[in-house]
Amino acid sequence: MIKCCVVCGREFEGHGNRIYCGAECRRKVINETQLRKWHERHGRKESICEICGKPIINARGNQSYHECCLLEDVRRTLRSGKKISPAQRNRLHMKGIPISEIRATL
Ligand SMILES: [Zn+2]
Ligand SMILES: [Zn+2]
Image 1: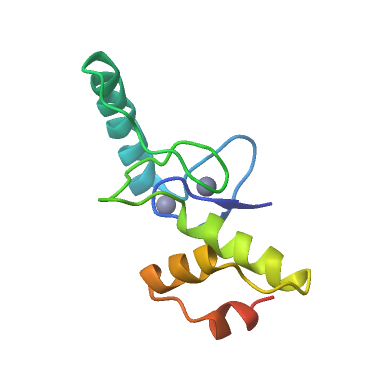
Image 2: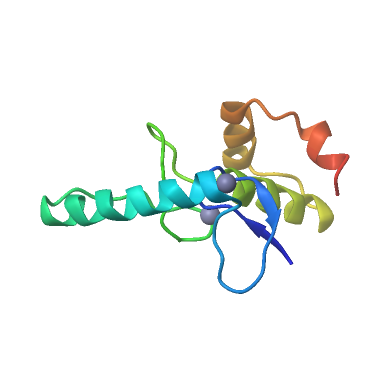
């Protein structure tokens, strides 16, 4: 099944409860898990994806959603024949992803 890597946001072919695409991202998950424990102890909040509600591992700056959640969210809207919302348009703009590119992969 196609899954979304929680680290780099790319889609990958995964089985079971694997949440990352490869060894490189696995290492980051382990590092981030330790970092999160540190944050918990020191009262720092981790980023939560606005779209799927799961934590964002390796979040950069003000990243507030997984890249592939955004793509899937927009694809779902387009597939249902609706127009994308201003928020979705904004997110795509922030990522520099043209809508035409998503339409091409519907
Ligand atoms: Zn990855
Ligand atoms: Zn997400």
